Length: 296
Length: 289
Image 1 (cartoon, chains in turn red, orange):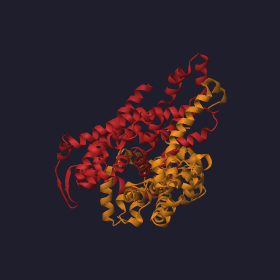
Image 2 (cartoon, helix red, strand yellow):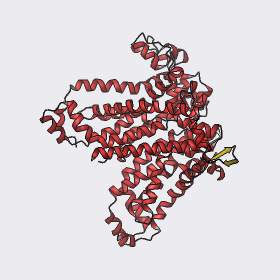
Image 3 (cartoon, helix red, strand yellow):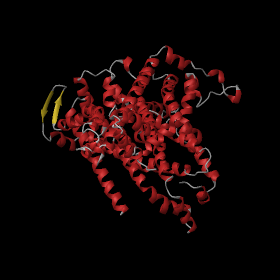
Image 4 (cartoon, chains in turn blue, yellow):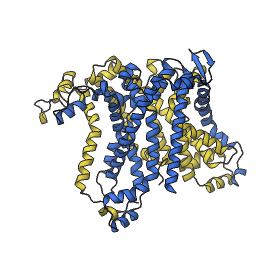
């Protein structure tokens, strides 16, 4: 490249310096440090001992961790099955250039994404309450057979979390689908229509293959995001540090946070975190390979 | 590319679409409406009515039962004004710094060739897979050694180097800053810093405004970081302050709902103003075009 001779070799580093200083101190170093910690056991803030793979071996037999893994998987499956179709459905409804109020509806559906998780937790803790909560009261109003004392937060922990997350993120992913749908060539849909394809066939054979790359990205975002579910259960069940009744709200990251910040065992917390990282990277690699195989 | 001539293709009755949109729209907005009503009602009315209390006023609503008393209480008796100032300060300074750092870093990665560039880019972007919670305690350790715990710098310094932001700016530089302009500016003897400020930044203005609002909202809503890093109650921003208020006044539904509304309203307003930039910024990473 010719341009490289016109500037000093230090120029790019000058521009990168502020970012790299912060990145190095607060992302790269903590990452390295946590990797070291994963092979240590910490007793309080000062004392640590190298324990080799003891943390990893303990992890395999830790019943709390497996409870957390189970809850996290249930939440993730529900997120994939509910959020993605809901988001795509909303986007399909809005994807018509002649629709009046299209920008208004897009705004409405997206608006929950602006609300911080602390506020979502406060809202849903009131909304899911027995009798006075919006959800039980409305359901009882619409279907008198519905029990107004339905114990959402006490007994139906996962459905409560899934519901809150669905309200929060359907509109968020909708925006991505909408952007992808607007790039589907109209000529392709026209041609399919002329060939006699119905609305469903056009969606299945024309639209879906065209938006496939975005669908893959969203699947990746939903799965990796759901696997890291933490703030919402932590705040909604703050009195039990995020565990919820009978540990039904305990997720992998909540457990990580509890072991690190409550019990002070940073070593074990780091081991959990790195196992989670490996699982997420593994999922991302498998998904990318599958997506590539599909394309070719 | 949505041409008007493929409109007749998708013609399931338009009415059905509108009915569905209105239903889903109501489902989305109902929690907000419910909260607004609850924040204006007395506690007695909260137990007896779902939305507005029934009475003999206009539309059968007891308008005289509604009051702004809880909002007055928030701002007169409780430390909410201070928390709001803290939030405004944290989110605005933090988002300005993050935008500037990411723009400069993204420029370097996109528009310069230097040894180690590919490796550095991969390393930085690779960190997005790390769960945030994994880094919390080692980061706290570092901040502790730097004496930055319970200090706003302890929030700013880690918040200004988000890998996602760097990625967005790198993309924006590749797409909208032509190499020829940079080269001719250099031939004309223009300094590197001047090139960045007077040529590069104006070219990526849409990404700057998009990222400013993305970072502002993310910082405004962050709960865990300030809760861990800041210990003095008077330094806490709104999410922590309102959440603590809920612990203290759990039975005062109307007060807590008013506090939540007051905390959501500023970012909602900002989003309404800049929604196009915000959404295009978010989707530019995933969708081309």
